[in-house]
Image (tube, rainbow, N blue to C red; front, side, top):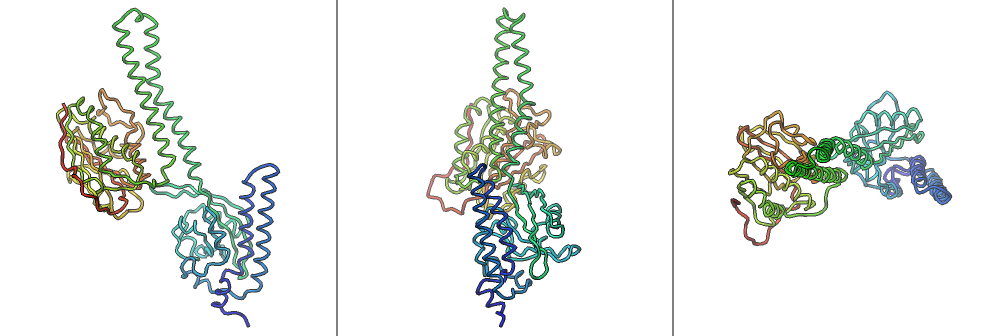
Length: 476
């Protein structure tokens, strides 16, 4: 008597008839891994060993599949949560770091008939799949990837496509589809493997951007240095006053190039790891106070006051890289001081325990406002740092370009304290890495306010400490 579906699942599970084709696909994957282990005799030997093991596994699976009865209906599988009645080979495919899906389909014209019948843990995490089987379009909607799957299913061809996952943290995956033959029920099968190429693409883009930006931005100060050197070697050689003046300008240009290179290198390093969330923790209130303590000389030089409103230490614990968090605070405070006229005040406030909506909400109804960065997935609680200057403000049309590299608002140059035009770009990329957000509000003639909000590590109960409170610092 043929076993019932329930007894079949108890012995293995309803995937048993697919073992031959699934293990054949896994043999291909293992073969590729083996080939990648090295070249030469050792590498080829490793590849053949891996292939032989995979082939032996396939033969055993075929034998077992012939001994097992019918499988459960596909409709039941589509509603069964992932990992329920996991087959014995689940640990093998779940150990693979790349997302792996087995696709089944009967008719080429039935566009909604493409179903995934097996997924590994990496695929569940990447595409947020909750079931062992379901419609393919519920997980992947990219036309190029779906076309590659169709070529493998109905054309019997190996196919590839580039899958770009949009969002605040972009990912680039290479989709590789391979035919797996026909299942016992007549469905055509294909193996879909997605390899993460985000790091490779980021490295290539970062190198190209660095070279383009460096060559473009360094051209002007280098030309200036070359011109002054030529002048000093000529008629100004004996003019002591002109020599001192030109040497001062040359020193300023050299300093500008040094700052530019430092900022470009910093931005490049941030972009390389932008898709990897930091795993540390930091006290945002303490980081802000460290920056406040360090800007004293700049406040005295500019004749600007700094008013702070901070919570107690320990009340704004955030998940992040402390050095990069200080870099965000430093850039925002430096910008505010730089654009605030002498005798005016920069306001700095920090609020913890806010929702994403509250952290990004407008404070001034009359202000032009824009979100420069919005996190993909809202956390429960955020800590929001708001830095407000008393400058001339920003026009609405300039807001979208504020975080572009080297963008300067026309008519709002930084005067004697020249910047590189990379500060806000660095802030945006750091906030993106920290899965946070960044907004700007401005009223022409009244100043601008930037808000950077970080996801909190946890709801903390701080130890008793003296609150930072509201402080106005005037350094003259």
